[in-house]
Every structure is written in C-alpha cells, then in structure tokens.
Length: 296
Ligand SMILES: Nc1nc(=O)c2c([nH]1)NC[C@@H]1CN(c3ccc(C(=O)N[C@@H](CCC(=O)O)C(=O)O)cc3)CN21
Ligand SMILES: CC(C)C(=O)C(=O)O
Ligand SMILES: [Mg+2]
Image 1 (cartoon, rainbow, N blue to C red):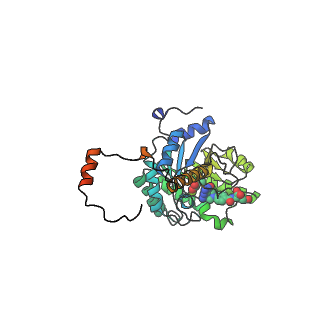
Image 2 (cartoon, rainbow, N blue to C red):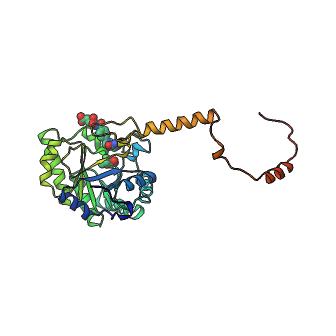
Image 3 (cartoon, rainbow, N blue to C red):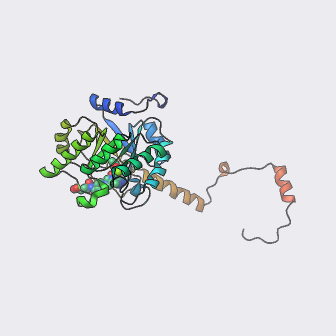
C-alpha cells in the first residue's frame, strides 16, 4: 500500500489499529524524541509514534532507561507532539512513575495526556502492571502493554536477554499477554521473544501486537529511530536492522565544516551580508584613525 499525500491522511485512531489487525495490514510503529524527527516520521506515514523512555540512552546520555524522569520525557514528548498530525502518539511511562499504586499510575498517565497531548500511554510488565493498566484505562487513558524484555526491570531479568526461552518462561509471557488484554489494553509490545513463542501466543490475542525482536507474525513492528537510522553506532541487538547510516553522514558534514573553517573556504560570498558603498564610506569616515593592528 502506498502512502497518501500528507494533507489527505486521517488521524490514526485505536479503531483504525484494530481494523488494520483484522485486515492483516502491518502496523508501523517507531520512536521519536524531538521535533525534526517527528516531522520525518509524520511525512513517512508511520501509524504509531512512541516517545520511548529509551530517550534516556538515545538522547540524554544515560546508560539505561532507569533514571529518566517524567519531566524529561514530557519535554521531549511535547516537542514530538508539535510535529505530528496523523500518527497515534504514545507516551512511555518511565520507571518509578506508575508502579507504586493505581493513584500514582493514573496521575502520571493524566500528565502525559494533559501536558503533552498523548493519545495513549505505554507501561512495562504483566502481572501487577496489568492492575495499573486497568486503573489507567478506567481513568480514561488508553494503555499499550509491553512484555518480554522489559528494559526498566532488566536487572531482575538477568540483564538485556531475550525472554520466554523455556516452556515455563514462555508460559509467563503468555500469562502476561492475556492479563494485559484482560485489563483492557488496546495493544501490547512483545520485545525479544522467540518467533515460535510469539506464533503460539498470537491466536489467543484479539488486540494488535507490535513486535521488536518477536519475529514476523505480530500485527506490527516497532524499532527505535536511532537504531534503524544508525544515528549512533554502539547499539546493535539482533533485532536492530539499519536502514540508513545517519551518524556517518553527520560526522562527514561536521568534519567538512571544520575543514572549511580552518582553510577559510567557508564562509563564501553567498554566506556574507553587504552594505551600500556610501553607507560604508560614511561609517569609515566616522571612525578615529587606527592606532595599532592587533593582527593581520
Ligand atoms: N537504541 C535503543 N534501542 C532499543 O531497542 C532500546 C534502547 N535503546 N533502550 C532501551 C531498551 C534496551 N533494549 C535492549 C538492550 C539490549 C539488548 C540486547 O543486548 N540484546 C541481546 C540479547 C541476547 C540474548 O538474549 O541472547 C541481543 O544480542 O540481541 C536488547 C534490547 C531495547 N531498548
Ligand atoms: C523499544 C520501545 C518499545 C520502547 O519501549 C522504547 O523505545 O522505550
Ligand atoms: Mg520504553
């Protein structure tokens, strides 16, 4: 299916995502953390945009997603919102902003909707998170679940490792998926789960599943923008395919700029402002004679 021109696109709704699932049309989801990226993903015609808590490592320089705060993510999410018209915008609740109680979870979800105009929020985990998800949904905010490799609690999972690789752990993933569906989530992200395990779970789910390292049978795929564009070159899990080499291009550009400044090739006349000759002459006449030259 080709992407219609920008001005003809309709806003993506939860209903639209459910229809895409029913029709077997793959759902395209991507992260964005700033305004220029939002403009690019809007123009490319993606369906869902996540301002991931992965902004922590991808744009804020933290080593993992644990320290990023609600305030930090809200600032980035607002910047993305200003660039989006069509895709569904999902805010990612950071670690520590929803686990303590239903009241905490609802208050945080409402901030993402009221202060950054998110269409929905995402939170990590099955079990207890399913209760938090239910509470947020009852409070009027659509929730996307996220199971398998849940980076906020990676320490408890034994590090960044694929999940569901034994019969018992696969059953855990299955139970988590059903708990989130039962709680009323409109969609679930499956991260780093063997494709065969995903295949086996899919027939039990009625809501769109978006995979990242979960094989080809999910209803859609999500990747981190910085991974698929290679804006950095230090993150390469198995699922991260590179579709462009943006860091290389950025480096080339900055090196070329530095070189032209050092060789005085830049700025050229076309980058330089003029003044009418008579104005320049009057200006010069108004100056006292030059007494000494600092240089040149
Ligand atoms: N740039 C970026 N991309 C992401 O996908 C991402 C983030 N950042 N930050 C938050 C989390 C962290 N994620 C991660 C981090 C590491 C692996 C990783 O090293 N995976 C190993 C698994 C090895 C195994 O289980 O055998 C791999 O080789 O794929 C996977 C996902 C996913 N999220
Ligand atoms: C990878 C996606 C699902 C995510 O949660 C993030 O980027 O924060
Ligand atoms: Mg996340």
